[in-house]
Length: 206
Image 1 (spheres, helix red, strand yellow):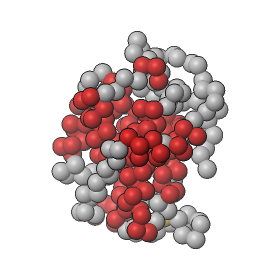
Image 2: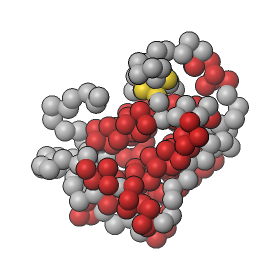
Image 3: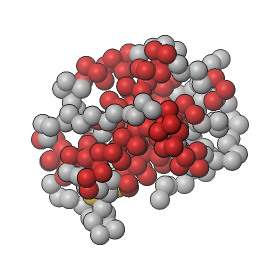
Image 4: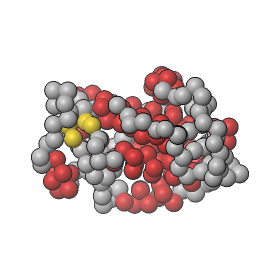
């Protein structure tokens, strides 16, 4: 978890983290497959960009304590918006990577972003995807093979740079924040950052 009062991403740190979000989401095979196949229609790529902007807003504009399970829910709902449902926990892996990268960028450490930038030349995707068919998660038998054999993993998830666009996209993010976040600061460093912290009694996202 991170204390928003110590959220001071700016300048190079903000720029690096913004790039990192796009790189992480571009390597998430569930999202990439949906975009490449336009599972949500022509607006699929736009919805992926909106998800990236919402993730950035969640980290940088929230006034509440940030918990990883809230980020997982945001990613899960982003998957739903492009007609995928994630059942293998890849959204949790993506969320953890983003939280760790955020903590590093707060400290001026851009090593994760640099590794992602280098790895983007030889993509190795996060696993797993199921497409929603007629409102149900009917598994695509060859989805895993398509992901493993896909050589077109060059999807770019660009975050809109307009402040007004980012604010408007953040409405749903702010709406998803809890009114009374937990105050447990165990494991928190002097800068208000600990790598991963969850809420108590976490329920599965729907």
